Image (cartoon, rainbow, N blue to C red; front, side):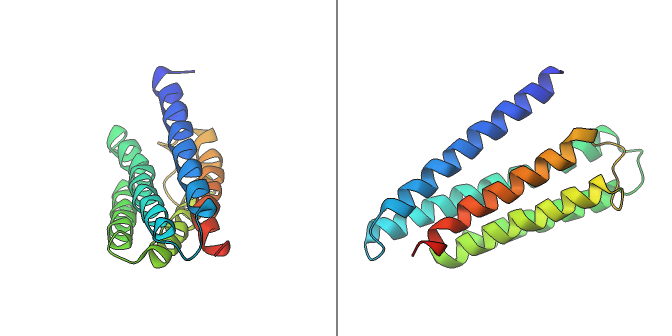
Length: 150
């Protein structure tokens, strides 16, 4: 396993642990308390940041192998996820968490499209698309859980 791959796995695990912790804090807070809104807002803001970073991995792949056709589409999709994450941060917590969760679910679809070679997949490691899709779905669920538990 390459150093970069190991670093990516460790970073993703650390970010997921942080999101789970923030979600638990939000769930444990009283539904009608200001602490709940603050906890949900923190989760939404951090989730939006992680969504932007997660989407940005495809920019790295595209730049690493710029000669592959369709790399521009990956960059455009990444910009779309960054715009969604930025917009989510300007919304009230329930809407922001819903947008972030939807963004992660949408990114899981993009991952699966890469895995099915419907989007450029030559620059992406074989294991990456499935692992990233599973990660995205799990993080989407964790981000949306405080809304369900209201």
